[in-house]
Length: 239
Image 1: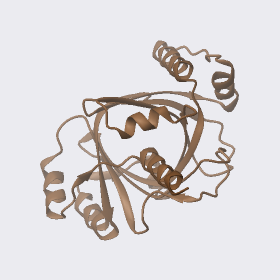
Image 2: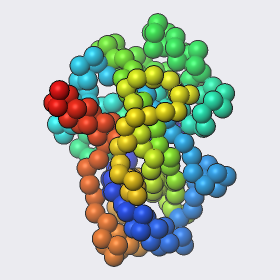
Image 3: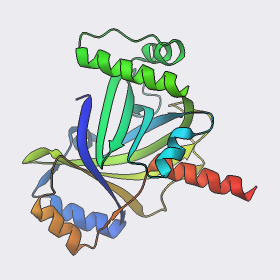
Image 4: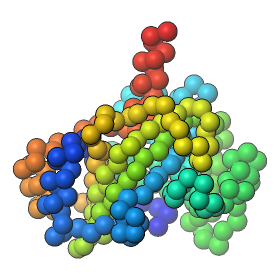
């Protein structure tokens, strides 16, 4: 699926809370296909922004509407997989909209550097490509930040639109913006903590709401790119 519309909430969990919650969800949820094979999977992103970081600066001010553009890659470092997801992620009135196209490296470079939209049979893919090009051109976006993390994902066996993801080993860098360079110098979450994202098209199931209450797990405001940007500004203010 290349278009998404859903509610998303984020939670910071201790290791003990995560393990207890995973026990509670076993009879209701299943690991997604990637996790069944490997227990977890790696996600790498390069976020695009202006020279002055306008998109993320606006986003951290919590406007009613905000948007981000990124390239995402799944799989391990240097696995030779030639599949890149160019995505717009927007949030308006607490609803998240995500639209993306899947590109080869050659198509991605031609798109970003030369404005050449890859031809697709799907009307929706072509429409999303036009939206991506418009955003790139409107803001003169450039690659700014690399963010990587390891994810475990679950989906509800009775409602595939209800999903949980647990992310850890969340790292970032603003140099060497290459998907196959592993080293990062910025950690975005303290050791022993996990970022849980709950993705739903409607209200939470009652069993899940009760589990959150029992385990004293509460929603928080957390953005990986936003956190990286705040750390950047703190360092700049020290100079």
